[in-house]
Amino acid sequence: MKKLIIINGPNLNLLGKREPEIYGNQTFVEFFNSLKQKYSDFEIDYFQSNIEGEIIDKLHEVGFSFHGIILNAAAYTHTSVGIGDAVKAIETPVVEVHISNTYARQDFRHHSFISPNAQGVILGFGLQSYELAIQSFV
Ligand code: DQA
Image (cartoon, rainbow, N blue to C red; front, side):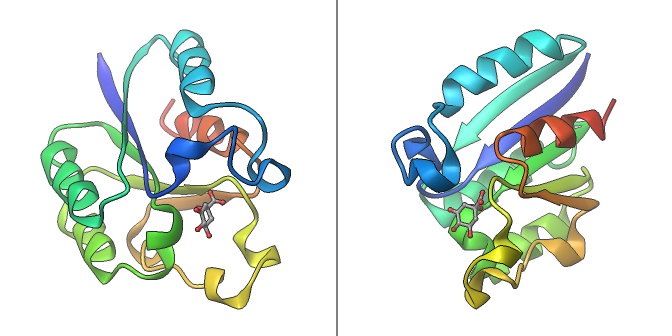
């Protein structure tokens, strides 16, 4: 079975509680369980960390064997040369996702260290951004 992983960065553990007007009311675990059921042809893993180095370690761990990575590096998107370099270093294609339309928000959210090395970018569709990313691997 083809393996995918969703990797979420800092503060995304608070989905459902955090700024619901931007990020919605649903917890990620709830949403993730429905995704797993819907896309049962894939084995889909989930990893969340608030720590930059743990995200880099996870990219190294899965990045030579998994079929695809769906990465929402959250705030690290805009700051982390290290995560950007890790995305470049691995072989598994990475689809960058964001829940919000980062281009409609503050200027500092307009730059991504992930995008130049991502296979594609999906943003602004709420949690559905993740589902659209999975569909890109179907
Ligand atoms: C985010 C957008 C980032 O700018 C922000 O720091 C996040 C979430 C999104 O999914 O919309 O934490 O990646």
